[in-house]
Image: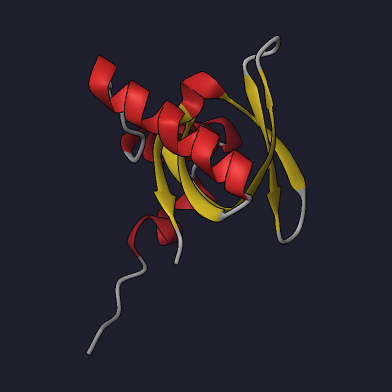
Length: 109
């Protein structure tokens, strides 16, 4: 049975600029638009953030970044109202996540 390598076999015949454009095109195909949250959803996210911060419970944040939704699991260590960010401690690092990027929060039991 013949295995086809798809576009990989043709990249050696293409200019580097064309290969770069194809990679850019493939990356953009997988991107999604940011979900629009209504007032009730935003209030629920706000309330759950405050509860998780005060109780220091582990939560899972769904964060919209550049066309992708990333999941982060950790503890909210600080809510900064001046910069509109959440300081979020994961197992590896401390991240500063903008309020506007959070599209979902879920308590981890």
